[in-house]
Image (cartoon, rainbow, N blue to C red; front, side, top):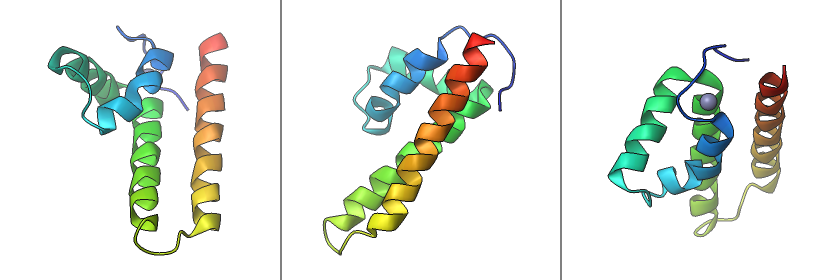
Amino acid sequence: MSCGNPHDKDCVEVLDRVFDFIDNELKNADKDEIQHHLDECLPCLQKYDLERTVKALVARSCSEHAPETLREKVLMRIRTVQVEIHETRTE
Ligand SMILES: [Zn+2]
């Protein structure tokens, strides 16, 4: 799935930094760039949502026992989205 529009910022670049974005470890200028990209790029936004879900799961697993199968499922879905994005890019 892709919006098909060209973006100022490369999708791969955005996805490389999406963890930092979630962790709030980016400078304001970088954060704005990522946010802007997520606003206009659905595949990256979906990936971002998945990363957030995984982070929430991992955080929760510190206190209670990790739902390992669920975590595996989410991680697998992330890989699928990544592959889809890469395939879209080489078209
Ligand atoms: Zn993108």
